[in-house]
Image (cartoon, rainbow, N blue to C red; front, side, top):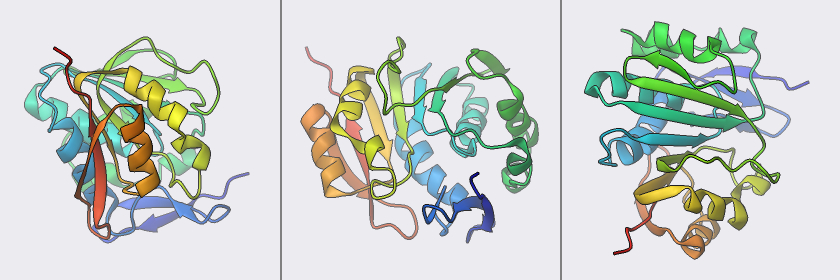
Length: 225
């Protein structure tokens, strides 16, 4: 049984620490701060699609999903959000997280709805946000989705903790699922990750990372004329 330990990060928001693998779900330098910087500012807001399809690898606590739903609502930007995970958090762990209190406003209702809706069913969460939670293991064959995506959030545990998630064949599948002008963002800036992303076809750039991290990566898929 996995032992989830609640930790408060430097911006006051929670993360979860797993002692078995000595890894936490978010940066201790600020869980909300990190997610906003990596996935929202450099992914969701960077992409210009009017009605984006977002694919998240690693649903985790649902923080990235919540932040995206809040932005979709704020911008009135119709968003379809697909998220894949096969390590689902128990309800009693989710109920301890304080993201709705930190973010306030509509965050409480959104966060509750995001976690209550069933897996495997595409469900409206709000007027501008539709969510499809998928229980699947991307390290095994057969997980590839039919939908093509404008934005990919890659938020697995680190390459040293979960190396099977960062393999070239997974990145290749994700590249095939990325629409032209689409983007791939991740908090990792490791050279091996950048090289694999480049090899499968992304044009990769190093960006300034969130607090506590020097850099992060963003890959782009160019339109072929």
